[in-house]
Length: 236
Image (cartoon, rainbow, N blue to C red):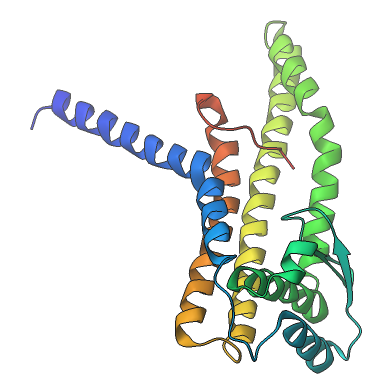
């Protein structure tokens, strides 16, 4: 095979890969939303309620110390410092989607109880947001200084190196987020194994995988921003 054909095949393979990654970056959230709408209509058996599940896990694993705060924001479910913020829809729908979301947030609560994963993530996010303010200035100043004398040229390289470091920190932060979300989902599945049937558990696993894919999509949007073909992603 000639060198020309090798180059052509490599270019085509690269283009296909980019298209595949862009598809994930742009449509992962839509896929998750579709899955959410489907499973929000699949109800649990009558002898199992969302409140029974919450109270059992809270009393059994957290000595009843977790606080549950009802919010109106749809898909605003979150955990922070001993508090679970759960939307009205999540709490009032006795569905597989609701119990999966709650179990996932309880997984974050367990992470907080067992170690400092969430604290490290929050620290890096806070640091990144501060450093991110200076990123555009570092890039502009670095590029400008490259066009002036040797000493300023080196300074320009240093500034561009610093901007690259901030970008790498952003990528690391997103990968750390993915790792934490995956671990929270694993903890959620262990909790749900005691409550859901095999068929229900299978649906919950798929739902949580689709949710995690949205974090991969955010990571890919940051990497593929240069293509201008993906949705925008916040640096931190």
